[in-house]
Structures are given as C-alpha cells and as structure tokens.
Image 1 (cartoon, rainbow, N blue to C red):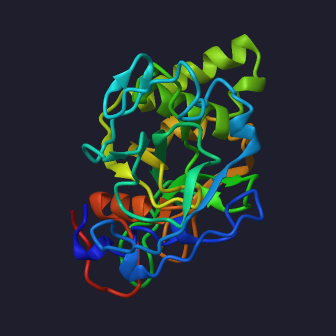
Image 2 (image 1 turned 180 degrees about the vertical axis):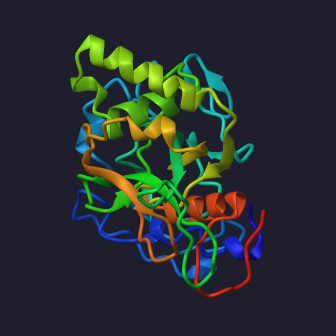
Length: 298
C-alpha cells in the first residue's frame, strides 16, 4: 500500500496538534523527517498518555515498566492481538515503534494498547434509487450513485463509517456486525424481541459475499510513536436495496446521527474513511468524481 497514490495518506492526521481531547502540542515533524530511516539526533517528542488510559480500564494495557506486565509484541498475546496487519514492527527500549514513522508524540495518547490498536469498519452500501426504484445516475459522469450508512461522531462532529475497536478474542467478522448494530441501529437500547428481529435481517446482509476494502495501518489523529490504529474495512453491499430498506437507522453510543449518504469525492470524512469509500466506488463502478483524474489502484 505504499505506492505513490497513497503517500499523502500516510502521516498527515497523525501529525496534527493539539492531540485529540487535550491541549498537548506534538513536537513538529517536517515531512522529510517522518521516516525512521532518516537520522534526526535532535528529535525530541512529547510524552503523553491520557488519564483515561492510565486509569487502567479493561481495554488498556498497563505502562511498559509496570511490574508483571510483559507483553508479547508481534504475537497474539493471550486474547490480545499484538500482530500488525502490516507485518513485523520494531520494538525499541521495550516500546513498539510506529511502522510508518515519527508523530512528534510518544506514549499512547488515547489508545489503550502499546503497538497496534485494531478496529473494524463496516461499509454498508446500496444504490441510490428514485421513487420507482430505478437506480439514479450522476448527471455528469453517467455512473450510478452509491450510498453508504454514515454516522456523525459525537467526539469530533465528523461523518464516519460506523466502526469500532475489536474486543479481545473477538473475530473481525463479529466486530463488524456488532459495531454496525450498536452505532447505526442502537441495538444496545433495543428489547430482546427487537434485537432478534434486527439480527435476522442483518444476518442476510452480513453473511453474503463481501469485499475487503483495506487492511492495515490508518493515519489517525490519535496515533503516537508507540501506539497506532489499524483497521479492516469491509464492504457489505445490498444490491437490490431490499435488506436495508426495512432497517430502522438510529444512532447508538458514539454516534450523534446516522443516515444514508450519497458517495462522492465532496464528502469530508473522519480519518482515512474517504479513501476507503473511494476504493468501494472503484470496485462497484460507481460515481466518485466529476473530474476524471488518474485512479489509484493497489
């Protein structure tokens, strides 16, 4: 994934200040000094781990030098997946090193795990249709318009894919479905009967053939030199629109709003989500841009 089309994709959000949820300013990292292979003797990153992480919730590791904490990096460590989707990462002075490069900040910030923090992003799509049920094409490109289910994040107000963190021991396929139910259908607030009905409808969508859009490192504003986000983004496409038509969209715990959104390059989405959505349009032959620029392919 490190071809020329994606250079910008790596470390732009991971260099922004202040760090999310804080007043902490990262040390500035010039673009040409991001990579670890570039020697930089005066590199002096700021150390920061959020109080919410240091409080020791069940989703967070202890500090590296805590007694009894001996994580197995680059391995599956009990129920915790410490392997990176991008291959082996360097461990330096007992701390994992961000595989993409410097971020101007050490510690874990808001992230619970040292090293990779695994998420899953379900991209649920359908074709935009008129009242008669015919697909709607974009007037300029003539390509059909794809829609996806987006949530508005409570933390930053940006539209996003309704994803979330993989629980220890959880299969990615289970995370994708659970997060979609919690974020887009508010399943945690439903009665057992309502939940069973939702499960039945969703099973149809999530058990059909799907397309893995992206697996790997994510340029995320929460990343640090020692902790970073990785995700598996998977597209579940409702070709006829019949499965999703009956599902009552309702925002869940991390979401302020949820709705079907028309896909185009004009969308400004959280973290690397625009990039994932673009890959889906290429796969489905759907509208993306009115400007026929060069397409990026893996």
